[in-house]
Length: 276
Ligand code: 2YC
Image (cartoon, helix red, strand yellow):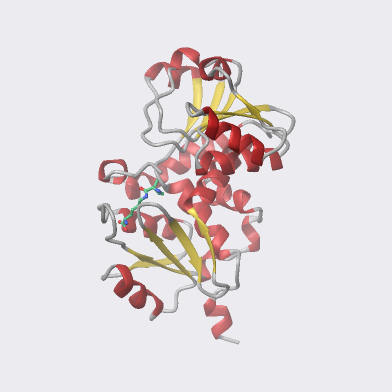
């Protein structure tokens, strides 16, 4: 899993409006609508304002990323939810969060990042949230991926979910990874998926790409009028790539929005349950 850096997210809260404008331009939807599409629900079937979200900083492993928790809380607030970041971290922070009766608790260590729904004890994670969010964005930008060829770059957790979710939407998926064995395993787990033998050639032969890899994509391979839905960090496309392609990217917003909406969709909000 590629770890976000402080630099990746230092201005994220201020950029949420710009990200919405980028999504509206590329997909005709804002982050909330992309997240609802990713969760398979219609935006007017859930009142996100009724949900309370607690975010708990975690110090394990490589420790806290400056403004990570605050960025997650701000993203949830931008969806209309009420959210708070606990003053304490780890188990103390979890106890602090639980005492405020949140509907959803977000916590991330260096390997797992979850949105836990307290009513149903179900959680969704960032790998699924990011894949479902960027698949929804690509589907919208492409005017639907059904029966279209889509290349997934990267056979990690986000790439694997992306292959599965693209196939569910009827796409003809090819998966590419510098570790061919990882690509083959994803293909075996998702029958009908092709494995790219030559990554450069596969980039040149697709105009719909989901880039779930941290590797640099050489713009020389990118065809004119390609759409690249790109959760991968670090985000290293050059000017030529931006001239040739529509590139959809943000460091955290789409993935966290998809997590928040999906986790909320697991239950009625506590405020509603409490008033019964
Ligand atoms: O500040 C904190 O609470 C840290 N423990 C957060 C660590 C997040 C590590 N994960 C990542 O950087 C990546 C992100 C793209 C989101 C999922 N994994």
